[in-house]
Image (cartoon, rainbow, N blue to C red; front, side):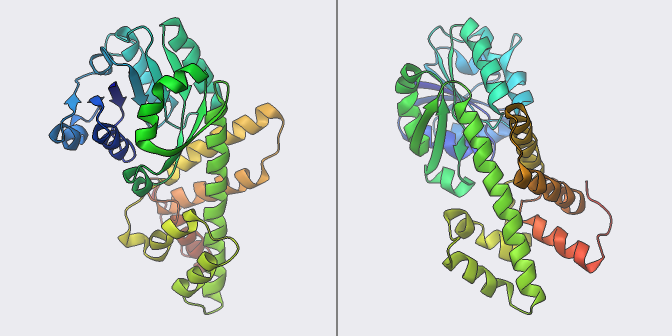
Length: 298
């Protein structure tokens, strides 16, 4: 299939690479063009605009930071709506929340495009192994057409309902990730305060009833945060939790855990830096306990 891919970031790069390796004809666009160089070297075409990328495409994938970044690629002479062919299926895989997903889908429909909100769960390493899990909302016929592209990037695809369902589920998953990050941070700090080595405490967590893929793949980051590159920035999680809290408010649902996690992420971003990984929550809590919070980084 002829595929356009917009957004070659930490997750987008391995995802687009898997599309290319699956044999699809791939054209990519990223605002910082140099990030597309590895894909160019592997045979992808690098476009100079979103409009150029989508010309002649059958499936479009967008994987960007937030709704504002999607909006920036949508309209205007260089936006992809200007050149999108009729019948294009758009896989919107960013974390933007159901309200934005439904709004983008309506605008796409006016241009003859079927949009699927299809955010994914998994880390960069999981993306590299094409092991992501996709949560999909939107029309089933569009999903059938886009499935070969989706399957190149993911190990499982869950069609959860109408437009917005995938985006809503992703926020639920990220509430769990944020809450578990805070819980692990607090558990490790409690153990260390009792004289237990951090690595030993983590072994117990990873072997017990709460063991999970998340616990295992965050092991290195929790045990050696300075030596492990950030995988999920605090500021991005703060954005996702804000969307989740807005979704809960709209539905009349109290989200006590999400609210507490959002507070923890905000404190950690202020003390450790918003570009740092979620695991820096543990460091922020240690600073507070020691009474040496220092100068805020953000």
